[in-house]
Image (tube, rainbow, N blue to C red; front, side, top):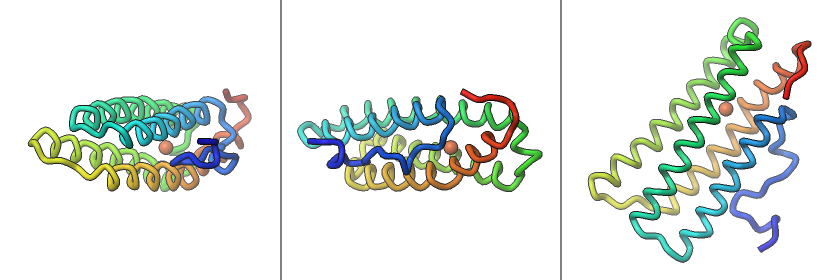
Length: 146
Ligand SMILES: [Fe+2]
């Protein structure tokens, strides 16, 4: 499988221009792609639970990185509406994933296809929407960013 055939293709369209954010987005996309590939051959409840847990914990760590950058560079004061929407999207993602985990802990199976469609849509739209707005704001600040 070459890179153009990945479940979530990585490309310049997903780059925000902030290195630390881009590196973490790349990890998230890679994690989704690897999980998607793995689940083609072994989609047991246990493997799905583990994958969802790993994705969730990395996503939360990543959201923290973005939100810390936002705080450090005054996003709330500069773009209060965008900052609120950005944070709300992170919370909505976490609660959607938590709902899936609750379902699984009750012994209910979840649709792997639905899960991955959600992940792909959410990630690409979030990166290309509110994350780009945050990055544009950060890049307009005088301080050099990593
Ligand atoms: Fe974000």
